[in-house]
Length: 227
Ligand SMILES: Nc1ncnc2c1ncn2[C@@H]1O[C@H](COP(=O)(O)OP(=O)(O)OP(=O)(O)O)[C@@H](O)[C@H]1O
Ligand SMILES: Nc1ccn([C@H]2C[C@H](O)[C@@H](COP(=O)(O)O)O2)c(=O)n1
Ligand SMILES: [Mg+2]
Image (cartoon, rainbow, N blue to C red):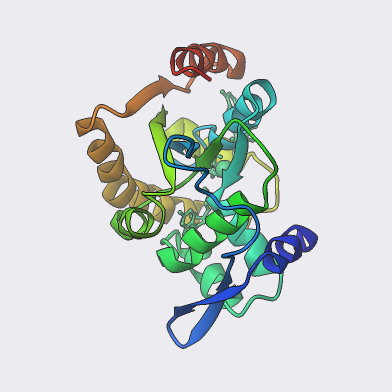
């Protein structure tokens, strides 16, 4: 994981201020924007913790050639890479609160720039609150073409049970963190889904079903969207 972040870091040229520190941010290498008519396609993937975002994104990536970027995974990698933001990120993850967008948006943009050619990006777990949305609009809106938001809906008890049985050693897969993560989802993330819904940009798929059944519905959505 550290190697991935190092590769991403080497692509950086300029600094981005955040608080008293600098989070390096790429300006060189391949641009995210590929001309006015050829912007990278982006699909946001949102839903409660454990709804199956990572699981379904892996299938979409495999079958449609979009690159899966999980904001949570990028933050965990950044934390593990002895980043100056490691402690801040760890605290947010444990408390189920949302890391300031300057960090997350820079990680996402860096990862996009470091990716090879692809059909687009699946941005999993972002934008997760108003701060995420504002930061994205400010820094990325004119560089990408957001096709839609895939909303994976699922009952809370099923989500919690999946996370508690996930066994990936995540610091936040415990009952206390999950309670906080669900609260953050309900109060901060769901309003973002409602925002995209008002724009006619939400495609909802219920995920309290077998993985294959869920994916069949998702596949139709991506085909209809021209992927
Ligand atoms: N449809 C499904 N049926 C049963 N188990 C599932 C299903 N989808 C995912 N899972 C399992 O539930 C757990 C959580 O799935 P996943 O990691 O994809 O969720 P997530 O939405 O990315 O969660 P988080 O927001 O916490 O990262 C995993 O162990 C996964 O294997
Ligand atoms: N946009 C984001 C995405 C994630 N985080 C932090 C806080 C989340 O609870 C944690 C885990 O995310 P997940 O892997 O469940 O998608 O990562 C954030 O602060 N901002
Ligand atoms: Mg996930």
